[in-house]
Length: 281
Image 1 (tube, rainbow, N blue to C red):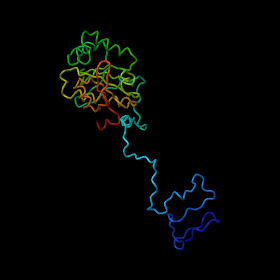
Image 2 (cartoon, rainbow, N blue to C red):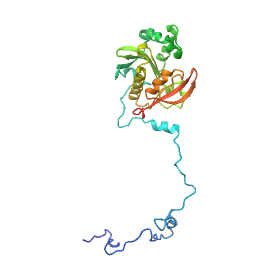
Image 3 (cartoon, rainbow, N blue to C red):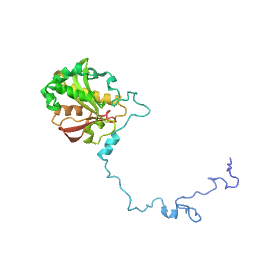
């Protein structure tokens, strides 16, 4: 069966039975009158045989020894939610409607962050702050006025920090502060990113200490932040380096130690839990 070209004035089609095969590497390139624009003497740059090597250039860069910087590693770890699966539409306040986050199931019972109300919670939180194990790191021991002042500074502010009770199985047993680390003075001491969210916490009920409950709930709250705050790529902690149980809880909850930083009131371990790494840590 014959084949015709669309252009009647062009050459006939190639016939494998009658036309000899050509070696494209051995045949010279066609000549261009005056040279092809941008490709002057292009045939001099092509090897005459496939086994010939192109001369090495002195300005080639070998990338084998290149190393990823810590900043690039952290950038790659910051993977926001896919636009195809946007997070839920929460309020427009600085912490995306924390009061409405609701309870979550854990291995030790249902847990919920409940924003503090001074008239209801001051006595209990003051009691916890006067526990020697807590006072050593929070510095709020003494009369309830010290605790009240600490709470009011957050409650009367712009919402960048929300003090909460951690309620486990219907019983208040811990105190939490969820705050915008990128808007906090902490941001002067580390390379903060927009919407970084910080966590302070203490386990108030003595019966819940030393059993891994704090670690489990810290992971729970960090995951709550990442689930309820779609714009947040990282959850940040900065426990006192002397507070070994707290630092261990952060590590057990999937945070990684990234640096030791000097803060006005302590030397702290900068802990970060990355959204993109939450499934492997």
